[in-house]
Length: 102
Ligand SMILES: [Zn+2]
Image (cartoon, rainbow, N blue to C red):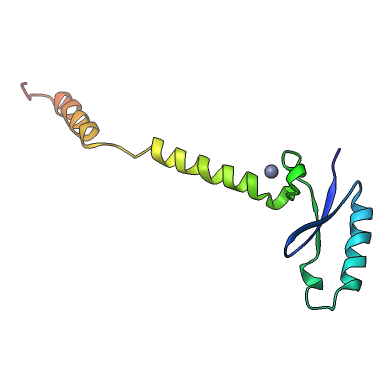
């Protein structure tokens, strides 16, 4: 079941079962606020994996952290062609040129 959280600049302050309920709570929070932080109050769908940590689906810090780690791993796995690769390619190209004896 999808849940919706009301977030302010410090994090999740309320979790509701429906977006309508969350929006209503957000409106209450904005009305109760002095106005300075009202713009920071927003409603987000909760991340299904990290809803217990009160993370929003569209900005889950847990998921964002995991994605970053995967990106680093992918970069490490593909360092591009090595000098050995170029040497090998060079030998193949040489062997394909007619009239060159090896
Ligand atoms: Zn998450």
